[in-house]
Length: 406
Image (tube, rainbow, N blue to C red):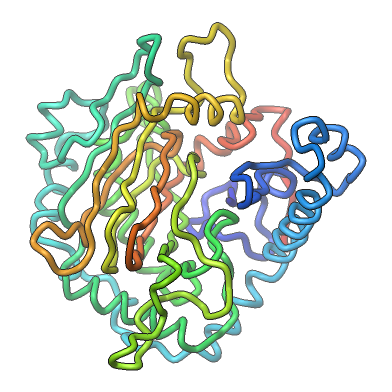
């Protein structure tokens, strides 16, 4: 997971960018045990910190963390090089997709955007959100009740883009996978099948989408992590002015990347590489997130929500992130709220549906039971918030250290 400080709308670090130093030393995800680790290159310090909890697995875990650490350092240094190589060698299947037009957006979503522009920043009551056109997945509950974690709520809309745009975008992503060109992994948790849309030439498209359409929507439905009421009152709007946009993919072991009948590639997965069927409990490196079901034919794969971090629940002291995840795992069957999702062409298909939630909302993608699913994830970020406090390590003011990458 990456973080960028400043006002650039492209959230993938390129030469000359600054990031919080925590992005180089924390949150290395080990898939086998579904746990994050910190590592700054000091093996002795790592062993001292984790030996008791890892036991005999410490050597294996350290090797995996070291590999992730080295990959992350290289990713920041080489991201522009990889991007340039794609620009030079990749021939787009649908080049027209890179030019933004309202015709790619669903008419009902455009109506929702207009209503949100008139409403201004939230939070709003449930009835107001419904009237604006949102489906309430998780009702906002901003005060702790001693059982569940507080939440800014989760909402959904049936469509953001037109079916034709979704089809062409999926074809573009499958076409890119066929080339075998090197690309940048969007994050450390998802291992295969996803791509940063910037690397395929969608920078300008995404700038317009976020600034003109998703920004007013998020100010209404999920304002908790970035809207500053005091700043709004003094005439300084709280806006989401940067973004990181990527795809993630999941499939079962028996689902083949190439259709056995047509002999054509039908997924975005690279061959002979690890793949994911699920994604464990986590929060996002964003102030607001849009998660859209882009394509696929699957069963299972519900999206579970567990409330926000940090949160005061039944504990009297503030939890660490690891403690919060552990507590959720202990009681998640009792507190989860699931968003069911279905793939394919059936009437109840959720392809095209998007949900919106705060970046601090804990959630997980449950295993797909059959088939494959492709999601478009938009992390929306506020430079104003991030320049004051890193949302990942919570350092602020003089304690916020940045590093130049590239």
